[in-house]
Image 1 (cartoon, rainbow, N blue to C red):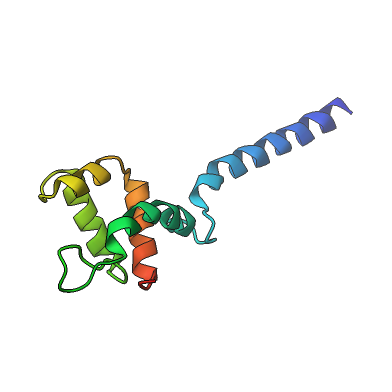
Image 2 (image 1 turned 180 degrees about the vertical axis):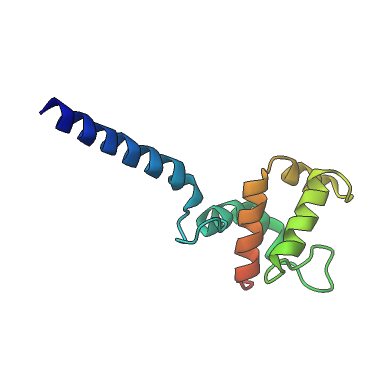
Length: 113
């Protein structure tokens, strides 16, 4: 009886460890390693303040439909202060790589409202 208890307990611990270590890889979209669309949508509310009115000819660009790579490059450049714009530098300085990836994913999949 004691041996059976130890085997079951070991199995439960092993399963718990496997689930705990694999869980951070999954996200709400179900694809392993994919950026979180809902996080991107949430973070984009601040972007909408200015960029919702952005056009090809305005000083505020339209960022909807840009590629993930382009949004990521630009946001990281603002964060690193290698691209000039004090407002965007301030916004980007608060973002992590994960948040930038989520924003890039959201804007690459979204159309202008």
